[in-house]
Length: 114
Image (cartoon, rainbow, N blue to C red; front, side):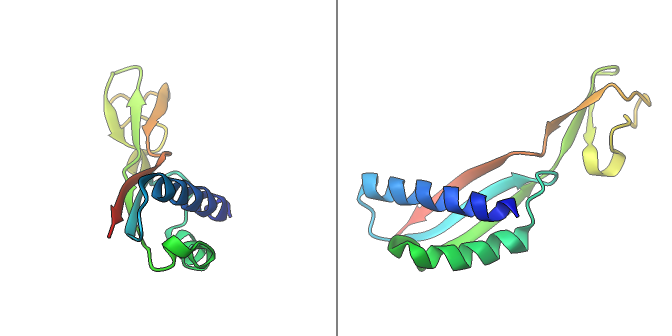
C-alpha cells in the first residue's frame, strides 16, 4: 500500500512545481519505476484518480507510467543480466555474488503542462 504515499508525494511535488512555474493546468505526468520496486500499477492509477480530485490543478491530469527492467550485476564475471528471468544466481557463471543494479527506482520522468 505504499502506492498511496507515492501518489501523495508526487502530487505535492507537482503542485509545488506548478505554483513556482505559474502553470495553469497539467495535462499528464509520467512516472517510471522498476519492475522489482513493489509498485502495483493499477493501485497507483486508482490512488492517483482518487487523490488528484483533492488538488485543483491536477483534477484532469492523466497519470502515465513506464516500467523499467530489473538488472542484476555479477561481481564474479562482471556481467549484467535480467533479474526477473534469472534471480540471484548469475546465468553466466553460476555465482551468487550478485547485486541488483537497477529495477527498484521510482522517478517522475515527465510533466506535460497545457
